[in-house]
Image (cartoon, rainbow over the protein chains, first blue to last red):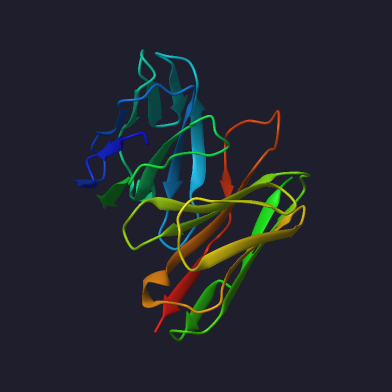
Length: 110
Length: 114
């Protein structure tokens, strides 16, 4: 069983601040997805990273896959209240299923 | 484009009553289908997944069961609900063999067992 940790568990910041959340594991993965979930809704796919060291940008969000493909980070620049939600990482296990982290709950206050 | 539906959106059931949650996918064929449960403020726990009609893999022993009577229909059931079955139930699909690993989620069902 892969050990998957997301940190921090909870983050409360003011609008305009920058933040980084992390997803770490002791296992190597072939790819990894990041999702965002708003209260009462299903998670929405943000990005897939595949190559070690890969960096992808989605507007103010920057995703990085570690060189060894064991970890990933999500950096948000100038956070806005609309960024509020639960951020989940989900590495591909290669067995028809994903393993989801426990998530980072982000609250951005105006 | 593909869409995924779940119903009901919310459900309040007494302990010991049966359960049936339904999930349907449109716009794709032979998808992999998944049932997850999410406790308040927690991550997603995979309950069941299916790679084809009648094929169900169970991840967590419990009093729940799943069935896939049609290619794009996935049902989660229980004969007798427990208080611990309360939670947010999510259905998801991904492309079958040869597709990517991304999963796409339905809107969820909020189940409260009283």
